[in-house]
Amino acid sequence: MLGFSNDLDSFQNKDEVLTALIHMGYLTYENGSVRIPNREIREEFADTVKKLSWGAVSKLLNQSRRLLKATLEMDERTVADFAACMNV
View (cartoon, rainbow, N blue to C red):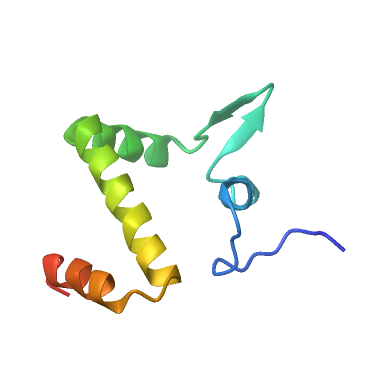
């Protein structure tokens, strides 16, 4: 049986993340378009994007992907290196 789970630790792919954000009200989807319905959240998102260059966003996304990959592969050296860079 397939269904929606509100468990934030069990996402398997980006579609599940987007579905959760829609169910929680952070996003709406209509006529093939996704938007942020809450004005305050939309403004905060816009401010964050303005403060960061897209290059910085791209760099953060790539680092996140590498960290996730290292974590899933149980590569403790790479994960430790990331933690050291973040002063964790």
